[in-house]
Length: 245
Picture: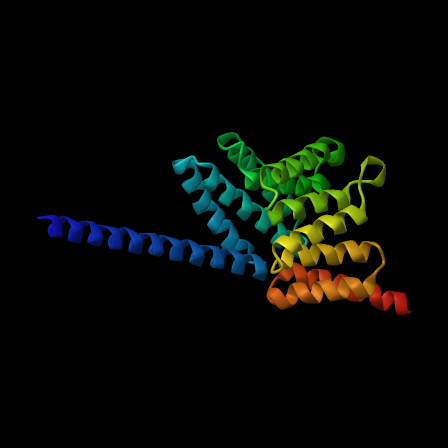
């Protein structure tokens, strides 16, 4: 009897473990597809993924589901920006803000929810009347909150660095601080191509073209297919060429 129960429990445990592995594998596959679409600037596929993620979020009503939706909206913004599609970039940022706000409301302790809210507010600024005064302070607060909630979250440091980079100096902006926070992100995750590509933009803004080239090349070494990194590389090469002439 005892042996039968033990065998049953062992079989159940094996089944549950197998199911967990299958779910993890499916999630990893979905994330790989998401990143592939982002890298390729495939706005159509990203929009299809967003439609599915929105339905999933409405049904599940969890912070994690709305975080996924917000992240997809941010990646759609990136793709639209590279295609210079301002209308789509504006809409994706606005929709992403709504998703991130829902995630924060469902789980105020989620570092990622606050990080996404910060980034999406920043992405909406160029497309909003008085966007800086309207969204800037909240974006900064949300990035700080993300770091406070999880000091080991590299994405939170990237969000704060972006705020430092785009905030006017008179209101606390600083390329030096942006570089500092991006280096903190890289200390936590050396494989972050996102940190490298933003550090490249910080150096470009400072006129440090050689340093910018080194950083964007490292970003492309980590993820050779990312359209945003290729876009930044073209900007760096253009500036370097102009400086020579």
